[in-house]
Length: 127
Image 1 (tube, rainbow, N blue to C red):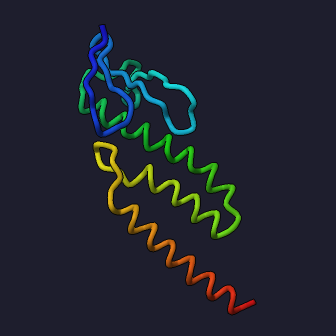
Image 2 (cartoon, rainbow, N blue to C red):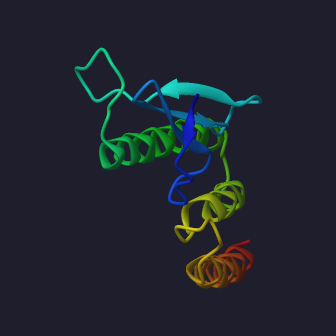
Image 3 (cartoon, rainbow, N blue to C red):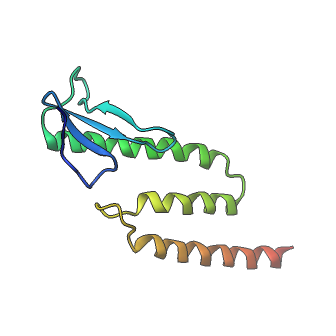
């Protein structure tokens, strides 16, 4: 029987399966939940150490976020579309360990809004 460890610092569920740690999660860009063994680099088997499992899950999560955002950024051809893509990314990056939003995302939103307003004013003066 699999034992759930309920770890809040990564989404999904890290659990024990035959004394090895696995992770059930829906990664960014995926439509369904998948279960994956948490294997350290160079290992054929999943780890038996919880702190190592957490670190592997965290790394996999960051890689998945990066890969999913690359496609959005490549399609940005204007400053406004780049700003919009970054604003979407804010809500996935600036989070507490319990997955709630931090105040940093609001400060960045305010800064981007101010930057775009200044850019718009200068652009209108040039044309």
